[in-house]
Amino acid sequence: MTETAGFAIPTPYLVFLGAAHDQLAGKTGVGVAQWRREACVGQMRLPGCRADAGLPDLSLEDAAARGAKTFLIGTTTRGGRIDRDWIPLLLRALELGMDIASGLHDRVADIPEVAEAARRLGRSIHDVRHPRGSFPVGTGEKRSGKRVLTIGTDCSIGKMFTALALHRAMIEAGMKATFRATGQTGILIAGSGIPLDAVVADFISGAVEVLCPANDPDHWDVIEGQASVLHPSYAGVTVGLVMGAQPDAMVLVHDPTRRTMRGLGSRPVPGIAETMEAHLATARVTNPNARIIGISLNTQHMAEKDALAEIARTAERFALPTIDPARTGCAPLIEALRAI
Image 1 (cartoon, rainbow, N blue to C red):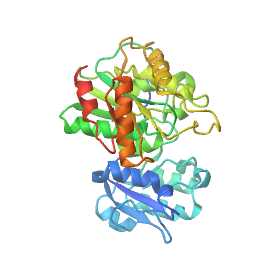
Image 2 (image 1 turned 45 degrees about the horizontal axis):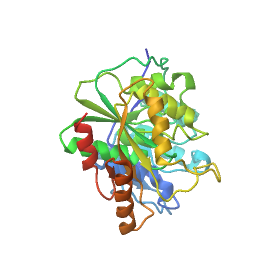
Image 3 (image 1 turned 135 degrees about the vertical axis):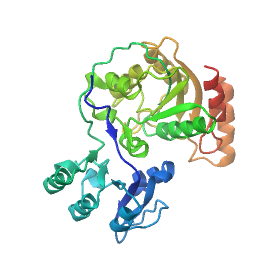
Image 4 (image 1 turned 180 degrees about the vertical axis):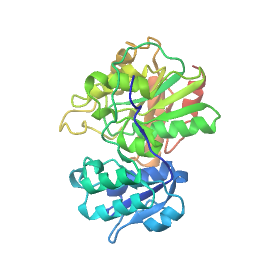
């Protein structure tokens, strides 16, 4: 058994955007505010910050007075480094009763004075890129409950966005559903999860089995996908995720405007049909009844008219419900899930 099923981060958050030089540099904090606004008391920005999560600007003391439980580092830095100028802020947050959460490559827990203060004050440090505890080897044994997994033709293509949008739509439709985060931003949004790309390869499928345990027969786990089984760089993570998830349903995510795979120069993005075939073959190793129930297109780089036409063409070509969650919502996918 595991020592822990990953992270469990207390809310509400104070979202720290630092001195982010643009909105993209604050994407983690902005994403948390977008999907978990009710879990955020405000944001903290340093002079020169050009990112804005749309939250009230607060000092550490103001945030503590409003009940903040976690100081969430929501900005990215070059190389994922922690700015030494932040250390006094981290120490003050701990003194005010907050935990610290970070998705950066550098570990906050490796800063001696911060780690010592956390121990002394009984606070926790959540370095979400670094998994806690140990995980079992996957077994592939069938578990009760239902699971839907987002898969994709490439990495960084919209799988997390689709999973979050689908989860929200399922809750609004009165379905039992839990979002299961598998990457650092998803974990910070959900407040729990396991960073699969940092788990030793032999234990990835077992970690997913822990993340998505047996549940009520009518309960859905909505699982955040990672990369693609056809991505030469990251397929190892995806294969373990797909097998451990034992998905009853999968939603394929694709960007019609992307021509080459992320990080692989001139290697073309695989087609939708071959991506479906590869993921189905992998999923059916642990769930022979796995199926693809819909397609989610990321059309953010397309004009509205062109995007809607592409959605219609894709739905007709593959005879599957096709959406862009940001433009059309997830209703057709809800109907498909209810039929399972």
